[in-house]
Length: 224
Image (cartoon, rainbow, N blue to C red):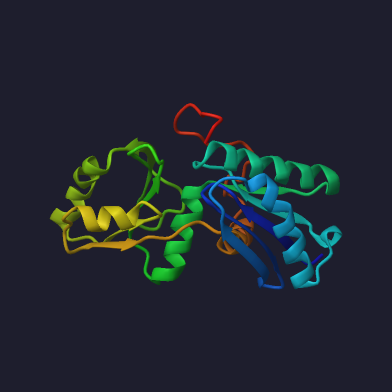
């Protein structure tokens, strides 16, 4: 059976959906909407289904990010994934937003270096994940104050090992602080197209821990 993945990403202010099949993203749609993912997501899914000319009944996998990110956005995405899964008996390829961004950076930057993924929590700090060279899963995750992140870079400064700082929190870090020459920045948002590609890749790696459980690094607040 040909693998066809419906992917949607709702963990940040950008809502997106994509369909992957035959080794490529067949259609995608995204928009920066702030809040209100629930009211936009299903129209996005309908649109990408029409653009790709793939009826939804042909979908056989659902990919979704499971956090961290906006509490409401993460819940919307996971609830939608579970709905599609129940309706069509489809496996859920749930990835952390950290792993998605780390994999996207690895593909874009061509070389694999140590990585720190930073996501803006909108509360003055960062969701942070640390990836060693060659690793697809983080060594650890935490919530970090921007001014404290430089201490984590210090070992790489001393060894001259290149390190990438990735995610929507990277742009502010790049302009507000002075960094060693071996630090590179990639201020990217997660999106459904990259998620579909990453999910297809990791689906061929049996050891990757797909899950449909949300990942929170602090107690959720429902107004997010």
